[in-house]
Length: 279
Ligand code: CNA
Image 1 (cartoon, rainbow, N blue to C red):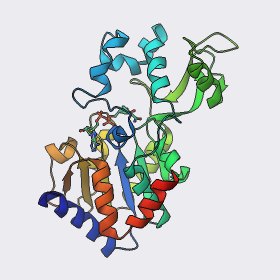
Image 2: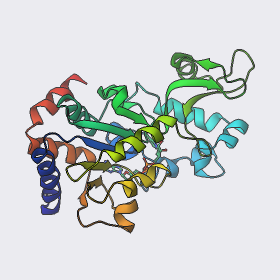
Image 3: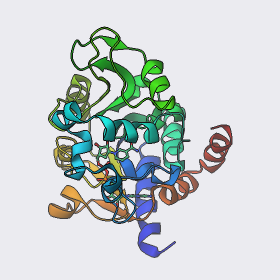
Image 4: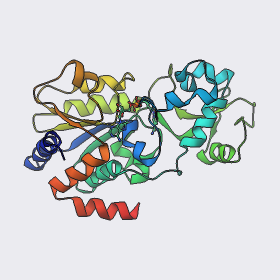
């Protein structure tokens, strides 16, 4: 490990070890799931946006655009089939967050991901905020009838071109937040409460995100100045880049690499390894 990475891990670990009563907030994105085989959006070459050409979209973000979905749901359904929960296993980083939970040191995970790998890793629903929704709830966009997860899943896996409502033939859509849709109330309520509980002993760890999608991207700016912010990412992003703070910590590298090194530094490596074997 290069010196800067060692340094970053040591600083994060020290803060966590020195303050045994404090709990960590994680703000995560697609980069913590790329090692599971799920491409992120924006990594050049491998990101979904570079690979959506086969879906003939007018613009890449159209796959998550509610108006475009109403006209042509096929690209989203194609993607949903690929991303569907159950096809992938949690990464080391997901597992590390579970170890934080097991140690009683997890305050919350706010995720932008829709792959539900935090659930698969065993993060409790009360400690988890799926800011952009998930595949767990589904409804007809016309008559709003709700459908259990397996209805949508079965249709996707059976290779059906469209998932239609049995009542009105409208399109069934998982409760994933599209561009132009509101985030769940739980996101705003939980963050507003959590942010008031942060102090100079707390740490907020941001990992695997380009911090490009709002309002999620504004969370690091709202962390109080007294609280340490750490970024674990392949590149420096968002407020860490535009408004860096003196006490910011930046680990430039893979989320899984950081997870293993942090577990080692905290003396939690055997717990992380045992979990890896279970999941
Ligand atoms: P993004 O914009 O694609 O950014 C990903 C970030 O992660 C980039 O800064 C990368 O450099 C970084 N990165 C990639 N691989 C790694 C790695 N191994 N270790 C550390 N950093 C890495 O994705 P965001 O999450 O920021 O964007 C928000 C969108 C992406 C949300 O609306 C999601 O729903 C959406 N998304 C989710 C998934 C998923 O659920 N797994 C996949 C693709 C996109």
